[in-house]
Image (cartoon, rainbow, N blue to C red):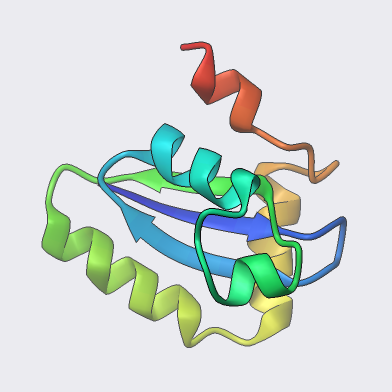
Length: 94
């Protein structure tokens, strides 16, 4: 299981989600297949993710991050991925 954050651009709109298949899910966001917030706000760049062995822990973490202040999310992304690069190609190619 994965908890992930997507962004529209550096310091742009941030979306937090959880999935069992990170490559597929991010691809769906990029293709605009996922209706709703990410499609509406053009949020497509994978800027952060965490992997979990236990689905309950992943869901708990997603809820925790969603309750964070925006600045806390920015701080975590900056620490993990300072240039806010799209990490998708790195995970999609293995």
